[in-house]
Amino acid sequence: MKKLNRWVYVVVGTIVLLFAGLIYAWSVLASPIAEEFTYWSNAQLSLTFTIGMTMFCLGGLVGGLCANKINVKINVWVSATLFLIGFYLASKTTTLWGLYIGFGVLGGFASGLAYNAVMSTMCKWFPDKQGLVSGILLMGFGIGSFITGKVYQAYTPAEIGGWRTSFLVFGIVLFIVLFIGGFFFVKPGEDFVHPDGSRNTRNKKKFECGIDVNASVMIKRPAFWLFFSWAILLSGAGLSLISQAKGVAIEIGSQVDGGTIATVVGLISIFNGIGRVVYGGMFDKVGRAKTMFTINMVFILSVGVLIVAFITKSFALIVLGFMCCGFSYGGIPTTSSAFVNAFYGPTHYPVNFSIINLSLIFASFGSTISGALYDSSGSYLSTFIVMIGATIVGLICFFGIKKP
Image 1 (cartoon, rainbow, N blue to C red):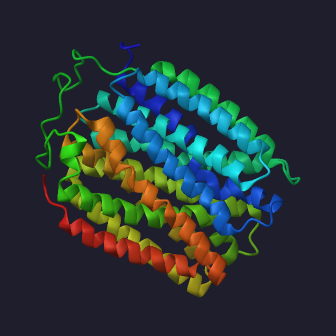
Image 2: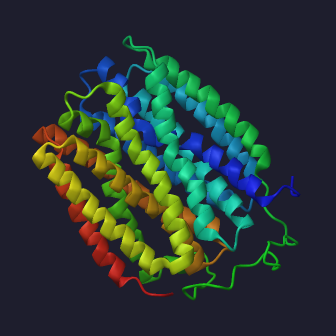
């Protein structure tokens, strides 16, 4: 397995993340559930996504802590098993707690385990292309929700409760894909030589002079907390939209058919995936500062488009806003991965990266907040106002980040 072309690992990692990323499809997955349980509020259903993202972060942290203690294949196979159990339990539930535990706790934790396993293993094969490879891998995670969302809508039985069969099938497919993919999780040895002729060391061409430190040192540095806050604010804005995207599209395009609505919602995932690759390559070319600034400014403008769309009731502008917001949001996880490597080194990357990703626990409350705002106001415009406020504060945090 070690003699495979290193790009094979990228392909396998992308496929694994494509399936593990279906946690982001909650906006579409939740619709038929809401039709069966009409007495559950939008905020209650949105809490499932918040729990899922919280457990995703914890799963990533556990995966990072175990990275140097057990074979990473084990993490992937445990993830496969948890997905199977979680989706089975969710498919049988008649209570919110069953949904929270099955999809939120088990599904979210499984996704986090797989995510950390891919990023901490596959990126080691590319010390020379950290941003680009992180972007390609995370593209799979980003577009996974679009693909699974389309499949879910196309094949889920129309009758009440038809979603249960789809959840069970998803659990089985996830188990098979991750179990097979686990065999390809191999770290490069000390004798690994990449194309530029150097051995298994960091690429010397860096835009910022980083340090190679563990988490206890990293969390004492102001740059870490400013980046952590930046990630919370922008990710929270992105997750607010992702979790409510279908409702937003329906509110403006009330006469648009369901298939078109699902496609428009899916555009967020597609452009999320594109943004991950583009911003990853940009990080390698122009560095962290210019990349973060671009992400932030495009995000602010994107939310502005959504606000104008809501005021003018323009479905075309909603589509444009979805694409731009997805593209902007895609840059955040890619930048996080590359930032951790560039600022704090590769030695402790699995744990340091999982700690940066804990920002998603706080960001995931953007979903719950946006659901509660809709329940109280009956409109998603208030969500957009909160989103643009978060992105502006994020820009302020960006200006405070200095080289380590």
